[in-house]
Length: 102
Image (cartoon, rainbow, N blue to C red):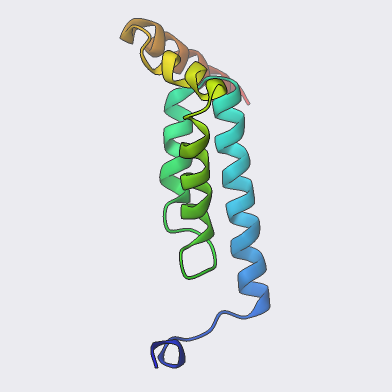
């Protein structure tokens, strides 16, 4: 049996992984809410393969997030992704400057 051959994660490991997915999911939600497309993309990258479960819970979160983009509220993020490159670059520069101060 495949399940028997893999080492099982203890409750503490599962809890740690779950908290990690929660934090990364909150980063994705915050970036999306604030229309920071680049940061949202980085948050998705950090979620891939993260978390407990047969399909990692980070992957499950991403699928739910992408499904949500199909609804009218998701159109706002999609529209932002289509902004001119100059505006996106200005936003990213502003974010970097804020991060360096904090």
